[in-house]
Length: 418
Image (tube, rainbow, N blue to C red; front, top):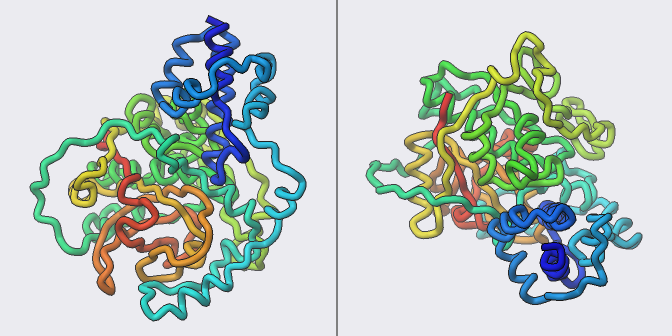
């Protein structure tokens, strides 16, 4: 068993940098370390599970069979660094990443483009922020080689769908939940925000507005972890697996940092990068307190953790063929879905209109919740709620052109439980 595992793990070799995106960079490293630990423990079932979850592992095994000399099973981190599956950044790379990202050229480009259907401007959330800081909150795996898609919902299109739809006006009794804009702060937990918030909306809708309490992004971030969800807290995660976790384990209640009356609130305050904003503290002053997985209600001891759990009943994606209409029907019937897409530099400057990528480099994958759709200026769009606080964009929301940045093919949802 160990001989097979040693040879297999040596196959996980890549050239150069592990991945340009923060979430993938961390994710690949964590998966590699899990594989090393499985091998060290002679856990063939664990290895096979990783291969099934990520065929790319098997591909690399087939390509690089037999290099035992780089293995050190006493140190998973060192082994993965040797295999170039965990990054070791140079001093030059670290210094470059600390430089403020100048977005002014992107703002000028967008606003001077006569064909642009959106307006760019300065968002205090990112003014003066470094490339490293910005990439570190792009916490969703979007590379198809490393995403976990899950099952695709089989559905017949039978609803007479409107041209424009907004879940906030469709279900006004749940508007306070659907339109609640959170802030992931300086943590790559967007994957947990986009999933938990969509489930929150669906539970409220399914109960006719009787449930308007916020659900805990901290519980999802801390407990929907590598073992259960193939996700790694502030270091990034998936958007499909949390919906399975909602079904099997459930999520407790939890509001924003400092809220009262819920089980487990978010562990970091809203913040802005490097600018004076009277409504927000500086992100430099916010210590990253990564949510952990406990079994008590730390913010309301009158609640019992196990009794405070709220559940989903299913988990599904929408595939590729006819995805847009399937997604619309699902939103129209049940409420918000989780979406993910690749963020480019110009997206940070979004203020209004229908965003479509025009300029700037890719920064990483990001998850949000999608609450509707429509058409504006000839562009079909998705209406979304972000997790960068309500000073960003259009009071924390945005419209993105359907199909742009890969969003149509990276949506997930599930039915609400209790």
